[in-house]
Image (cartoon, rainbow, N blue to C red; front, side):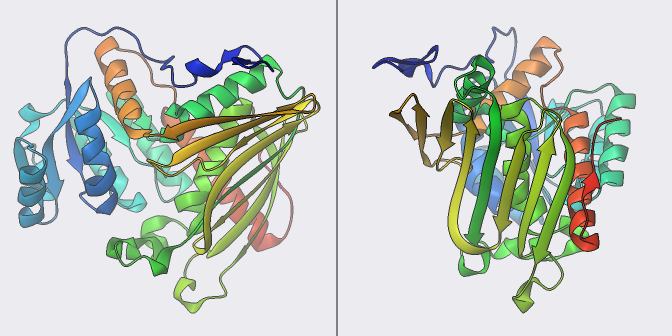
Length: 364
């Protein structure tokens, strides 16, 4: 490593948007379906910071909430879920951002597909693998652009970590450690989080909500697929009786790399990813929460370099990238197949934990 570069990645280029391409037309107009805390506090402000798209239609079960949010964020229309399914205001949007509880994604995607609208669907793609596969079939048959909202893939730390692994900075990857935890019930500002404690709506607990972050990001950074998984879950607090309060899982990848990941709804807040190889190590800490001051630590040849990225917003580039795909008629990188694969892995993790055995997850 040198003072101004790290194995081919110049320090001043960490924030480069290597995915961005020129577009004609736009902006792509979005209907935002589901106006919970994440949509109001993070997603809608992020649309205001994006360049290729804008949020124009607010969709909620409550007419009053839809009107209030539309007024707050200067959106053209406010409609109910029933009106959305009836095609009301369809002329006011080109794409749909589905940000409801996991089990409720499917009907809104189906309606969007029937209207010929592009869909950006929050993760997890569905509450079950079967649900994800039905969504995949729906969007494939409709021929619409579809992407799962893995915003981590658009953060500079994650994208440059993938570049560094590919370039050989760590040598041959050996193991990855990923974690995400916070004390969910200690946050009174998030009363809508109660749906995450309902397995029917969420599909699980810590795994389906925040465990997906280290799971998907590890697959992305390594550009590799796991072949087996072992896991354990626990829920010592009665408030989490229906879902996993804590989860730990270990993947072995097709090239022999192991990944140990943990997630918790009831532990001291933190979120990290560390990739260790035969020659070096990359540590991203913190990494997964929107707007955090992100730091990357690079170690190799007895030297340590710390890269301070400042506050990183992953949502605006995610929205712009998807809008770019719509405008250029290009397939997004995190399409339906990515969402189905993660739900397949989620179900395998729960199977491994329930049956206390290693489960084969190799692609056929």
